[in-house]
Amino acid sequence: MSAAFDYIIVGAGTAGCLLANRLSADPTKRVLLIEAGPTDNYHWIHVPVGYLYCIGNPRTDWLFKTEPDAGLNGRTLRYPRGKTLGGCSSINGMIYMRGQARDYDQWAQLTGDDAWRWEHVLPSFKQHEDHHKGATPLHGAGGEWRVEKQRLRWDVLDAFALAAQQAGIPATPDFNQGDNEGVGYFEVNQKKGWRWNTAKAFLRPTCIKRPNFELWTSAQVAKVVLETQADGRQRCTGVTVRVKGEWVTATAHGEVILSAGSIGSPHLLQLSGIGPAALLHQHGITVRHDAPGVGANLQDHLQIRAVFKVAGVKTLNTQAHSLWGKAKIGLEYGLKRTGPMSMAPSQLGAFTRSDLAQPHPNLEYHVQPLSLDAFGEPLHDFNAFTASVCNLNPTSRGSVTLKSPNFDAAPAIAPNYLSTEVDRKVAADSLRVTRQIVAQPALAQYQPQEWKPGTQFQTDEALAQLAGDIATTIFHPVGTTKMGRADDPMAVVDSRLRVRGPGGLIGGLRVVDAGVMPLITSGNTNSPTLMLAEKAAQWIIEEAKQVAQGTSLRG
Image (cartoon, rainbow, N blue to C red; front, side, top):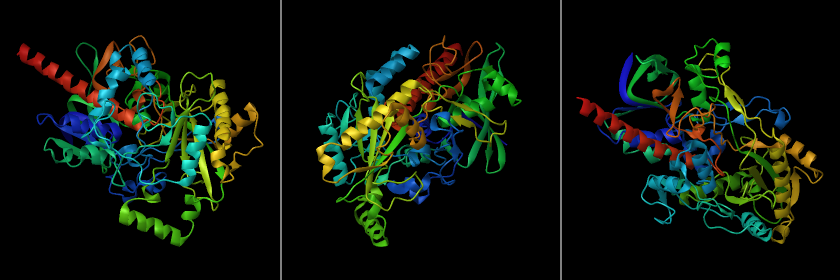
């Protein structure tokens, strides 16, 4: 069985949904969007607190795990990745965060393309934004991507915010101005108390009703199809897909766009013969292009979760501990779409420095009025809050590598957390910053007691070791198909996200997802991925027009 399209997009996640919307706006172009998971009709996707039931659930999650990690003292971690319409935007923390202007200026420097500078990416952020404050020089209105204030507050979080200010962190009303230093409540991608994922934003209702648009769910791509042209260069002509047990070859006259994420896209390239030659030979895969950067350069934000017991203040732990408490929470959400069920995983945020010598904020806090051993585990039965802190700019680098030529087999994910002395020092210092904030007068009334990690850990060595014991991922993987200059042997795509190949570019093949980031952004990565897709869509449309004009002139 075969089918022909102009554009084939692999992955209906954050980037894929936006691309499908933009590319199918031209009624002359047939667009196919392929998603390995099912549709997003699972109710816990849409209730904000439902992320607790989506992570680790085969209905919505790929169920990846990392390899044993030396930096985590041999531990493996659950590595959530969305497997449903909307991808990770259906299971993530819903935090709207762009990062820092310097992130994008660094991208421009690394790629040699000023299109990635802050002043040039800002319009792409605004293009699809629908900010609750309306249009401003920094925010957009009327776009598909809704940004709202959170619909709840907690006394314990207000106290933490004041304590952070007493510790020298300024209050900020907006983390998305180019410099996110400060403390305040996160803005979230929600609409009237419901999660706002990219399937709702970009597929429904407009895109999905277009006659030139087709969506395949429960359809997993096994490889991209590559053909050698007369001039010796390679071109991607389609994909091989298993759709509900049936094999289909889908042909693309224009482009195949991989938006399968920082894990899925490099894995698919490797399965297709694009990747490190030695790795491909090892698994009996014919090498179409020896690309050592495919699956390399993995970066992620590792959070260190410090838990503090408190007294004389409500937290979700005890509020949700009884049947009556759960009933009250459910009733509030049912009647008003407010309260704990409208919660993002983290409500309060802060950006600061691990030490005074840092030129920019290099720490991000996610503060929660709850505590648990790990996501998916039950809440503790005592009142507590969690102050999770991560190093925004880790120097550790990991990898994603196939373990089998079978496309169904999960790849090896090896983040190599805390593998550099710099990262270990920042981890130790970040725990000290946490303690400094909690020791301020604003929190004294609640008698905070450090329950985890414990005050007995004080030295750099002890704190770094401790971080390895308790730290977990915030699941912000990027970089595994990074963009870069032509002379960078580890660059998988060029600055316009086209895949490099022997003697130039592989025709008709692009990667558009967080994997193309050469450096991780200084904050949550979902909305930067949307910005990437917005720019890529523009380039794809422009290049198609140029080809059509060239053909017309030759004709």
